[in-house]
Amino acid sequence: TPVIGVLALQGDVREHLVALAAADAVARPVRRPDELAGVDGLVLPGGESTTISKLAVLFGLMEPLRARVRAGMPVYGTCAGLILLADKILDPRSGQETVGGIDMIVRRNAFGRQNESFEASVDVKGVAGGPVDGVFIRAPWVESVGARAEVLAGHDGHIVAVRQDNALATSFHPELTGDHRVHALFVDMVRVNGVTESL
Ligand code: GLN
Image (tube, rainbow, N blue to C red; front, side, top):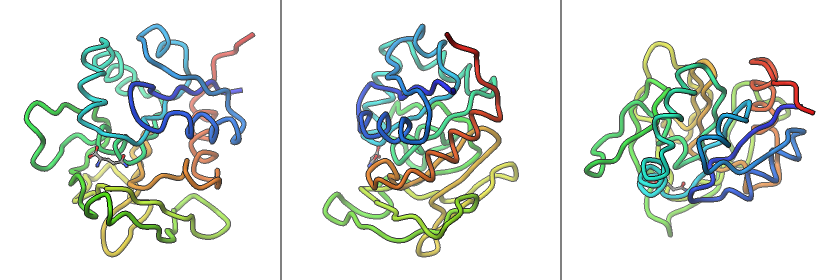
C-alpha cells in the first residue's frame, strides 16, 4: 500500500488525508524532513501559498522538498499546492518561493476573490466516468505550460489541471467534494512509481 504524505504546514490537510485514505493509500501529515523521507508520494494542499512557502523555509523543508521532487517523487498540488509546483509565478509577492517541478507560469487569484469562488464541472484527462465537480476558491490558473507539461483540463479557456512526469496539479479542490477519482489517479501514479515495502 502506498504511503502518501500531506504537507501539513497550513491549509486543508485533513480533507486530503481523508480523500487519500478513501483512495486506498495510507495517508500521513508531513511537517518535518524525516517525515518527508518516509513517504512514497506527497500532496501539497490548498491554503495560502505564501504562508505555506514561508513555513516550508522556516521548517527546513524547502530544500528537501525540491530535492525529492527533482528525484521524481510523485507530488500532487491543489490550488495553493499548484502554485507551489509552478516553476514560475506571475508577479510573485516579494520573496515568494516555490518548490517547482512543473514548467508552467501561474497567475494567483486569477479567477477572482474569495466571494467569487464557484463550482464548475471539469473534464479531466485520465479521469474516467464523466466530469468532476471543480471547486474553485480564490483559485489560480495556469497562463502557459512548457513542452514537457501536459494540459489535463481547462475551464473558461484557462488551464486548470496539468501533469509533468510525476507532478500533478489542479486549480480546484477535489478533496472538498467526496469524489475521490483525482486522488485515485494520483495514488495510481504513486503505485506505478514504486512503493517502499512497509511493515
Ligand atoms: N489564493 C491562494 C493562494 O494564492 C490559493 C487559494 C486556495 O488554495 N484555495 O495561495
